[in-house]
Image (tube, rainbow, N blue to C red; front, top):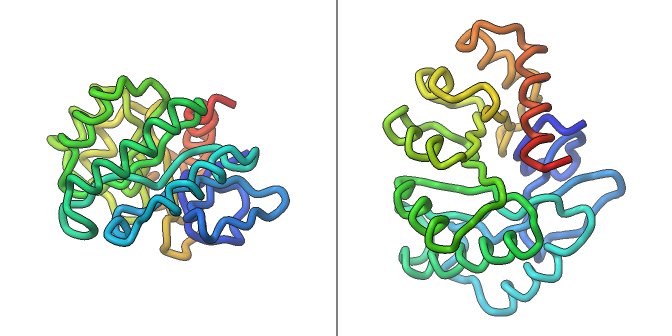
Length: 206
């Protein structure tokens, strides 16, 4: 059962390991998401996009990403949008969910998903924004994935069935993340893990 919705720890188990196509060397029994990080979009080439398409079809790749938009780092936004469009179209074709990096670009992300008619599940990873930013994403059906740093009011405002948890690049155990979130939800840590695991199964359609 997978609980950790997003990690960069290549040795992680019970997790979706986020990796770039050039580094994709799947280990037995692991699950992956493959994508070109927005921070690296300034150097993304057609070769990288072709590698993404090949890797995305691997049976151990259960999600696409992370992809997304970042107003603070990476290529100009129009280039980031073009690369994210490639990811979203691929995810839709393969019927695989999408893990999204979104920094000060939530409206652009929503607009792009609507324009492309994206119907596969989408999750914003590492959600730290306030409820005002979260609300349109939730209204659009997005899942929100929370790591060690989060806005408590946003966690409370998120429908329980749309809450995911993650370790990202922190090196923490997923149980420790659950323990941080548990008091906000007035739940025991093991109940947060159980909830997040069930939600992630639904997100992955497993």
